Image (tube, rainbow, N blue to C red):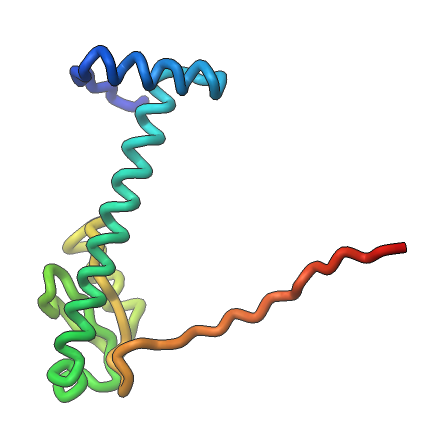
Length: 126
C-alpha cells in the first residue's frame, strides 16, 4: 500500500485543479499526481539535455581518453566508463538509482544521427 503524504497548496490553485479534475471525470489526487509526474519527467529531460551539452563541449578530451567506450556523465563529469554498456548501466543505477545520468558511446562525432524508418499509412480511395 502506498504511503500518503499531505501537502498544503493555495486555495486558488486547489480550485483550479479541482475544476480540471471535474472536467476529466477524475479526482484531485489523480490530477496532482499526473502534474507532478509530468514535471519530474520534464526536469529529468532538461538535466539529460544539459549532460549532452557538457558531453559535446568536452568531446575532444573525451574522445582522447574514452574512444570506443561508453561513459556515464553526471553534472558534467564522467562518473564511470566501460566497454560494456549493460555493465556500466547496472553500476550507474546501483549508485545513482533513478537520477538522470547520460550514458553514451564516445564516438568520432559528438552527435549521432539515428534514422528510424517507418511505414506510412496512406488513405486509399475506392
